[in-house]
Length: 563
Ligand code: GLN
Image 1 (tube, rainbow, N blue to C red):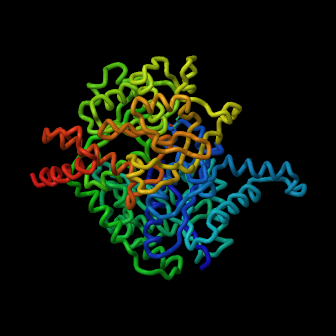
Image 2: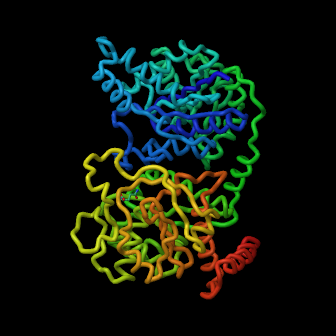
Image 3: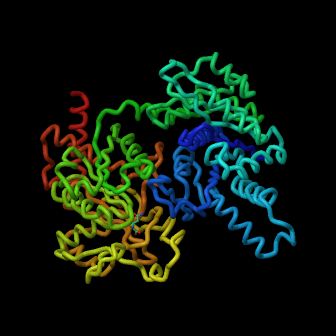
């Protein structure tokens, strides 16, 4: 089958959830048996989001092939079975870089290089390259219609309708229909204006996904359709929902997948959504609840930890448990102490991060988790800080530091690898993407992964310094995962504790709602155990094996659920 294209644009305001809409359509069309792919075009000039502040841009999502991409790519992987890579996300910066390189190489044969056709051709070629081999490519254009910087992208996708034919291309516009409290009405004017702007540049949308906080009546849909030159039944309500994974089901109820198939003349099977529906029902009807404290720096904008939040939710699904997230600013712990911020936590997690700010607070949180036997999960920076805490407070190396902090010491427990020492450029130079991790027998990691080798994604510059491995091991730390080729520590765990594990990679990037990541599932399981122990006041016996602890827990979980 020839590849068909859906182009998704957004209007009125940003943050309308275009990425979620694109992912949900991907989920539905894949459930009908199509091979889908999703592509994100970002109009900003940065070559990739790797150098941007997560507070502005949200999380940087990392792919297997080591691309630092927009966080929407995380949704693409969570809602479908695709594996995204470098080709699935490109920016104005990348497009211009490539056109200018070609110009310097004399590839334009003396021509004047212009936005149309050279930039637009480059955009079209990138879209075509990324969508090779799939039945349906869903292409999301970042930004909002009307922005100056997205114009070349919109022009390129407009041209693709002419190049490929109307039966192969469809346009979906995500827009806002706000409810105005003073008049008690839903307002359609912002949508009318946004579609007008889109039509001025030659794009007529086939479907409108109207973001709203309530149902949109048939009357209003007809009015929107009339003013926007769209059929009333192609005006879809995209209501705020309590869980993002409900979105595909809400679109399906309105027949969106059927209508897209019809519009693009695609013959597909009926959608198979049973597993998805079951997962959503699990999510909406939890039997238990746990509170996980996330101790970090970027806690003001939870988008900075998007994949992490999702992976914790997936861990909750695996345990029929609602996961309440308690975002704790590490600097507040420095000021007010651990007890004030962490006493309600059933599990403590220190996520990835950069720079010195708040590290002391993170270390205090880890010490609190370690000494009070509270489940602890350290991810990337979180593992590095856990290593410093252990070095300082258990191994007696009071001056243990990470080379990242620029403080001179004899004991760089976290250090730079030789090859990183010569790196001067910031963008794209960390240890990025998928690396193999070999697991040590009879460890928690090995038991959870049920495999002796796994591949996980990385994004960091610093590593555990092997000089300190022996000392750590003597004090009871176990290095349960190693990247053998370079002998780098990937996972460390502390068995003299209910659940204490740090990993140098980011497991959150590989967790899916239909396939929760084993480390997250078990961390939530252990936190649930801790929470039930608090409630039922039964502490596990120290000599108990993990298996019997789990069996005990199962009994308590059942008792508690009934009660
Ligand atoms: N700042 C640390 C490093 O570069 C950890 C990075 C991270 O947590 N992703 O090694």
